Image 1 (cartoon, rainbow, N blue to C red):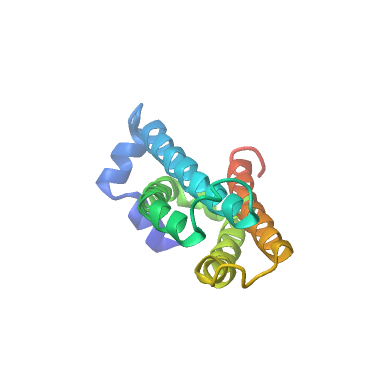
Image 2: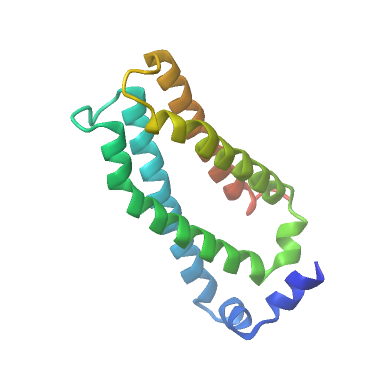
Length: 156
């Protein structure tokens, strides 16, 4: 906690926190990153589930989306850190924030451990039902992270 408080007193964070447009700008960047990130997740999972973009292989779509995904993740992480450091005590004391971080960890594990294996597997190596189940779980996991993040502003 002392480390985060020290970070929150760093002059660039103080400037962002105390300026009229600093936090709204950082939050806007965060939302743009999240929107692009979720768009890549939804597109990849729709293709995995067999809905749309069937003219593209799953691997080709993944390669096409990768720069968008990486850019969006970078924007989301960096802006999220700035938002957190602006008032770390508020976030560390927030149950929705704790839930969001837990869900984020689970979504990342699912993404890296399950979804990536399905995307990289040989076409036809999984049943349509398995593909649909993985796609639904993936999208649900990521949207739960978003919903928990949204609850931070409304739930103590």
